[in-house]
Length: 124
Image (cartoon, rainbow, N blue to C red; front, side, top):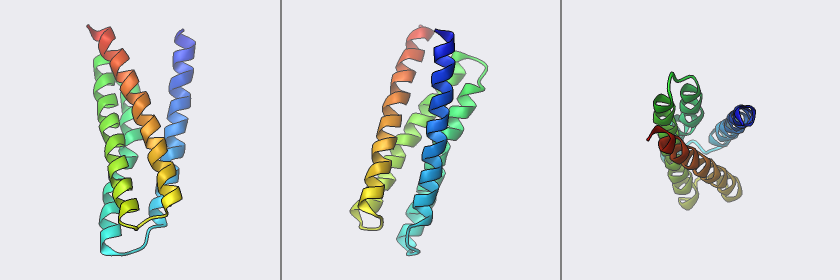
């Protein structure tokens, strides 16, 4: 059980890393209009914080500490979907690329939410 849990965490971290690299490439491809730049700034900040908070949570000293960082990562993932949707719906980004990122952030959010529920149950 412990081994599979460690393997999942490592694979999930790799998945987040890959997503973060894809997000950076996506942001680099946006046009240089004022609106695109502002939304790209927000998306870069919040989108890259998902993996940062996940890694910080893994290094936490307790389950409660881990839960705190997973919760922040979940919020960041959800906010990333908002910025991506705004870019898509304002015709500032490639629809297919944006939809792929939204889908991946949605899946990440579901995994993080599920993990958070499990962690919180174990804290009771």
